[in-house]
Image 1 (cartoon, rainbow, N blue to C red):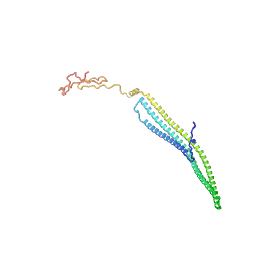
Image 2: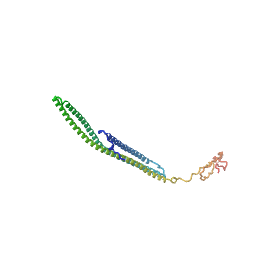
Image 3: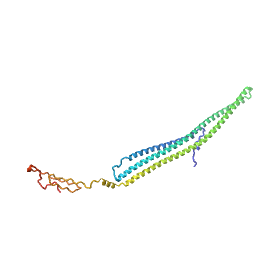
Image 4: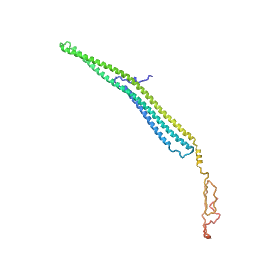
Length: 336
């Protein structure tokens, strides 16, 4: 299939009409706007990545598992370290995006400068073409009017050929001669203007073709550049995912080395305070001279013992001292 090109499909039947050219310029302006939109998008995305990276960096500096120990502590330390690395990789991503946006901006400005010179040249040609066309059309009108004046003067002479008024005939003849001269001058001027307009038209045709080729070349470059820019942008995002996953994998590897039982045993060995529980507290009767021997340690709570009422006290006047006694010498609230 034959390729289609700007230079073949943006002409107008009217010499001074710029419709085809204006259509191309509108297309180029739309393309320039697209470049600016993509550029702004990438700058905004870079700002988002930078903010995310800074927030994540601040988060990675916060205390996390400070009081933990052994393998879990090591895993949490690796976790924080890799989060810091992830944040730094996002900072790098933001910088890479800004560099790509800068390249796009430079490309857009370069095309703008090339277009500006070409458009100024074409605008000057359009103005020159319009001026010569108007001058040519005006000279054509003058030429046609002078030709009609000449014909009318010739007709007047022919109508008055048989008139005896010689002076009048000479006057008509003089007017006819003047009209003929005016028509010839108008014809010459008209011809000169047509010739000049033809030269202007030929120059405009060449420049229009050159402009179309240049504008088409710019459009091809713009489409390719935008395509490659977005492609690169997506590659950067994909690489960031790969980088993040590699950093996260380090955390997963560390977690694989985190052993629950080992951490429990580590804590026991580090903080152990003894391997025997305290002995139970036994009841000791205040009135019994014998103190119950300390029972062997037991993990079971002491049994609940029901005891009788306290004995009534008796009075002994020996040495003026009164003691409380238990009548039954074998009494004890402790039963085994």
